[in-house]
Length: 147
Image (cartoon, rainbow, N blue to C red; front, side, top):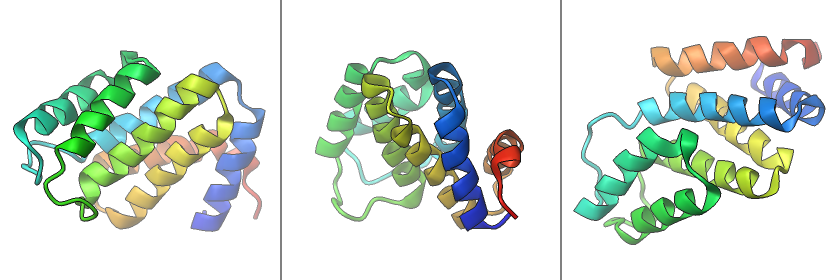
């Protein structure tokens, strides 16, 4: 499946999915993206590192407001604004969309989470956890794919 076809299939799937399916699929994508973060030190303050580790572990049960608080702490503790490394970038960008999805249940935000997973797979095509997340997503949306 090409990137374009995968993107279109994700959009079609999201249009047909219910809120519960959207939420669980976004969580699975975020789990794959969170695995990229690992134990690496990023140019963040100690408080921002604590928030990054906490949100990577606890986002599945967090509310939109809790996620927003973590994201704000990370943003305030970014020592190199505008130059975030790709590992936390993919996760945090997707997490921001997930937080918006939790607040609004707008499927477009879930689509954005899943598209960021596709982008991360494109960037890190040798990461086994990301590939597993992609394969799960591909299986899920396959019936919506156009040749």
